[in-house]
Image 1 (tube, rainbow, N blue to C red):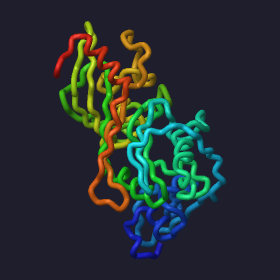
Image 2: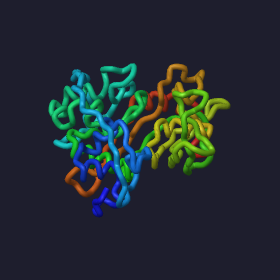
Image 3: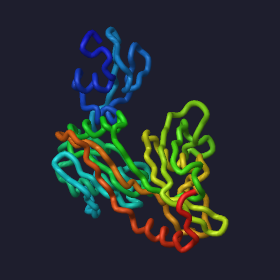
Image 4: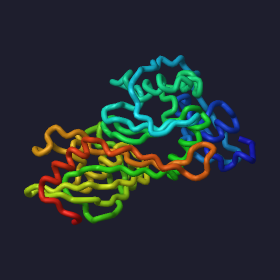
Length: 308
């Protein structure tokens, strides 16, 4: 690399803006391997003058994604982005065990221009971030590659603000606080993540208790969660870590005789993000789902406690 202007540049930015091979949004799907000075490198690595970059990438394959007429609850839409209130149970994009019936399939039907806005064969056109299948709430999707770069950059630099609500078993350590741990795959259950003393990835969640409830000897809490990092299962793992698993969580919780049929009580309530071409950020909110109202009515029938 003999381009002085590229010194200090991230590798993925160098590939897209200097080499112009493909956009940053396509890099993870297209690149098979990348090395700097014959050593494997991550796309976030900063380059130095004289570095030798070697890239192996795949040509795009024809997409086999099928548009499906799946109803969507649209919060906002313009030429660059669409904001959806994702229902519980809807998978975000096709993958193992879910080849169809996903949010992407629904968007391909709703936004006929989505396929033309991204490279052929992109398995996740427009997807900027994701929510777990059983997590409901607000999610933003880009309609073209330029918008994807702009929106994804805000998730990468952590300037996006997200707020979730959750109903949990137990009472948190304080009325408000922070949970900062390292998260790694659980050695005893590969579908799950665990807080570890070393290794893994740093994760940070801020929380505030909105209300607590008492039912006999059991306690429950309605909490507001603000993740500052975006690790897989972060909120679910953090709630388990502090002894207050989310009600209805089949991976991180346990059965509750009072709510035997409960599904995951986690909802992405608010997303604050800048849209392409705009300077002030916008705030999008997804209404609180009926399953929350139902459970809150049940909890309020017990003896309520306002605070800790």
